[in-house]
Image (cartoon, rainbow, N blue to C red; front, side, top):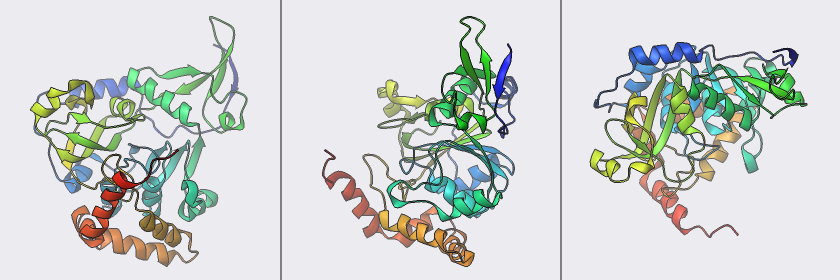
Length: 331
């Protein structure tokens, strides 16, 4: 196919579908093995410096913050990250100095709360590299990775500046003669996500919108899952249609109630607005010692996420639970 136009963006994830399929055949365990472990151990075992990371959830909703904090606590460096409507999760990683490159679909904006000071500094200074996409484009890339194909033809981003800052290539379709954009597949090294429930083997169920977590899990080499509760396999099998991610894709599963805090966990607990506003204030301060003090207080000086929850206090957490059920409906 003749290339008519191509973007200037860099491909940060170097994995190819063929390599990942071969790696999966040789390394993934298909037996029903107990995959329960501590977050600390899962992060240490499966996430390395220089990995490409995909993050589950969407915006502030159902994000795997317990894993995010542990990555920062272990000071893992030079991560490339899929910024697929990534807000507080990627922001904390960047504040902790863990990120060197981002595939951008939606980042920096904390929605109604305004813009991130942390991300603006790092992107504008060039300390963190970036390539541009759209949410649809990133989803298509993950779909290609999950299907094991090296690229996917799409119509999104054609004729836009976004396309020119991506690594996409515009070609003439050999069947119709139309212009299409070829996007490289995306096969992350690690996918981290938070779910409502799972069993000890890693069968995962999510209530509400799954966004693109099924695609990310299928496309990634490794998958680490935290969940609000671990349940029996019998309970999972009682409703097999709700199992979004099957056990053979998952490498580690951790029961971690409140694991999305300060994000919203649908049907469990609401956003912690005050916590997020305080974090944003720290990140916007021109004195970098302010955000460093925040990281010390809420990550480095705490042993794990359970200590974080203790510091928050039961009353605060249960108030968030009540808010999720008592808030008036949006009309």
